[in-house]
Image (cartoon, rainbow, N blue to C red):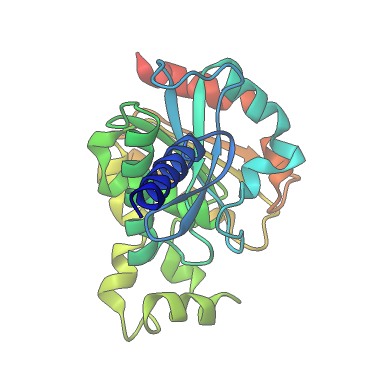
Length: 267
């Protein structure tokens, strides 16, 4: 019996050690919290506990949890390469199709806490970027946590969720916000990124939007840019693309500009 118990103890210790090794993070899908999934892209020469910059990347609506979303597409290939060369860790939270509701915000915070411990890196000051719904998430994260953000890049993001709720996404937004705008006005307004213009005016902000975007109107970015400027923003830039719609390819040719903007924000 003693030998049996000893064997069981050894087995438990062995399995525990294997699990600890398995928890060592690498690029790809990772699990945190109660089975939630995020996605991580580490620099090619990554070493745990090293000196890295951290980029929180909000994916567009519809990406599955635990996937790279927009940043994993071929259009972002050069962007990923530059991020690696410049020692950026990229993490994608499980926003799914939430329009950055309360649960998505909690999941993002939980993911950041998990990564700070697992990667042994300081995430008190990070960069945020996002596309479409993820652009909304990036703007809201910055607007609600300005002390934690070095700079923001909003790529055809939803700056006005109220206006967006009058489009084809009305029902999906209603489900995630617990009602229509008329029923949940206070919450909608709390998720309207342009309402944080006075805060965003104090953070370096780069906006990229295509003039032919028929899913998120460029007017939302125009209004955001104007609101930030009107609130004294001096570190806000707006890159317009006359022939571009709501597509990942808008990043092509802007990769260096994004990282140059981030580097300028550090000074």
